[in-house]
Image (cartoon, rainbow over all chains, first blue to last red; front, side, top):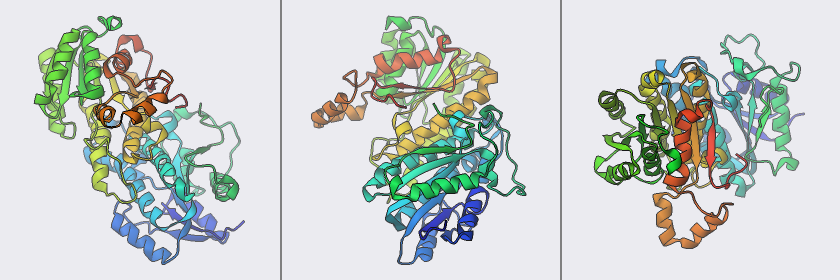
Length: 228
Length: 258
């Protein structure tokens, strides 16, 4: 069902962010997307782009699904140069900070922030240390801002999906290479569209009934990683 | 701390950020366990008290100039330990940004403040791992991070500090899997302890400290040497040979849901 709310999708250039933006638009939602070429660590450019898109209004929902592609390249940390470590791990942290900070400035009271991440950091994955480090950083950054923005009735929650779903969304034809994550085990539930699952959760979190859910982690991975 | 007697006898440990607070306490605890303790500090003249505490506890202190944001300094600190003692058995990364106790105005601050935190707690976490790897591989040693409960539950007042401490937890889980085949263990401790900032608060705002202590089931804040030190030594010792990828919350029961 279409929502009349305006949704900003950050990280809509590929993967699950792209699939969610397309799906919401196709059902008639009002969607704002950042240009894929925008440097998300440039606060001035991000802020300007947002103000230009929003005008004098505000936005109701923010979906953040922005992890730098280099984070998904499997490699031992001892093989990385400092520049490679920075791009694979720290760039996405900075991007999350700038995105959340700038989005907050145009977010309506009572707005909803949904941070999408892959489940990898819950267990850790050899070869993906930068990715796991970035994901856990962003997840707890989201919890911290959930505490800060609660006074404005803004909720901030994280949804984690399987790595392949995060990278590919529902684009089976994508040429993105999905690293092996053998330690995560098998899903308990049969195959389904992670994009559908996430959109269902985004819609649920947007309801007034979900107004007390903030700082939470919802894991939509078909029961692959069952948190203690 | 007789329980630590001999636990790290002859072992060589580098503790970063060891000039005061939890770092000093952990360094002294390693001294009690008989270790040779590399006291990594930005200003060597600030490490005398820690060195005296390590020596008094029965350990061998070595003061090392080690600003962890400077790749050459951290490499030189490790190389000095190898040159003098021939081995490195554990690295305890405890250093934090000098701004770690400051409140962060998330909505209005800039990436410069983020960089202050990330350079010490994220980048140096990676860099120390890379620099120590061949030596820890040889000793089948341990890499321990001093994280924080804030890095698990998120802090309204300190969102950057929370985030970089969370980074260490993600790093620990993944690196424990990556280095498992080398028999290098990777863990973290999330302590609730008296810090220099809390010592000041005790003088300036004693009621606030009492309120914090009231939230702790055991009724007090942890002592860096006698409460936080022993679990840290344990995690780096052979007694924890089957423990890796974990965060041990040492908080007197303050945080029971993490």
